[in-house]
Amino acid sequence: MFGRRACLLGLVLCLSLLAGGCASQRSTDGEPASASTQTKSLIDAPFRRLPERSYTPTDWPESLAARVYLPDTPGDARRPAALLVHGGGWQRRSPEDMAPIAERLAAKGFVVANIAYRFAPEYRFPAQLHDLQVAMAWLHDHADDWRIDTERIVGVGYSSGAHLVSLLSVQRDGAPLDTPYGGDATRLAAVVAGGLPSDLLKFDDGRLVVEFIGGTRAEKPEAYRLASPARQVTPDTPPHFFFHGGVDGLVPVDHATDMYDRLAEAGVPAELYLQRLRGHFTAFLTRNGAMDAALAFLDEQLASLKREE
Figure 1: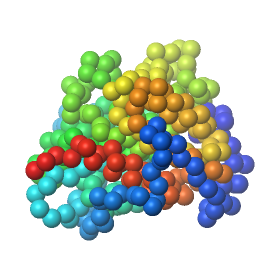
Figure 2: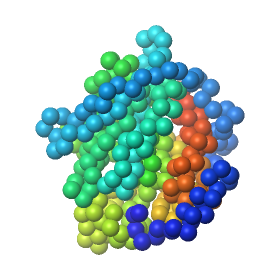
Figure 3: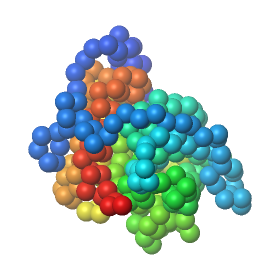
């Protein structure tokens, strides 16, 4: 998908293991979250999905839509929110891929915005990052309407969607990729990143990456660096939960392990959930155990940020 390392044999192997296999976890804080301790403060709730609506300004290069899910939680308390971003190599697929995850998060009390973004090669990096920044500003604008606690907005994505939410999370005020929509309104409280391509300089010059950046590594080395979340980690980076197929031939697992290690070195809470005998596609298809652990991780990370009403 991202270069010439696609491994069809790994996909065939993993398709035969959809119902089996194991997972392992690591945490900077010692014992990892597990299904037995998951989401104690989040209880399943009914939710509703609003009609699809544009989240972009009227002068944006392309009108982009968001699918918003609102949990039916009682009272006036502010709720956490999640920005969901789908994969597809930055140039295909749709928010429909993330609908089951959106529903699960909404049932756990999150206000969810499952968004579309501009596709390469028509729009090159950093256009997609700017779309996410605008989406975050839009969520802040609707915080009162939807009872969003803006201190507890998380990013959730898979593959290129994971790349974009992780990249959003490492942006700082005054950074080269910032926009008028940047700043505090774009800060994430935590990230859930599945199949994350964390360092684009690791890939060969495959078509999707070249079309996303608009050139090869030799032609645009600084753009590749700026587009690589692993190369932007600081102590201010928000906590990350990674899940990744152990035999991923499209985005090798060292993308997750290396960024996990960089976060640990910076003192940032992180957890890595390795899906053994899973490739890039089957890690997403068999994600339920990973999402159990991700929800527990989010519950833990957001608990101290909860606004007192």
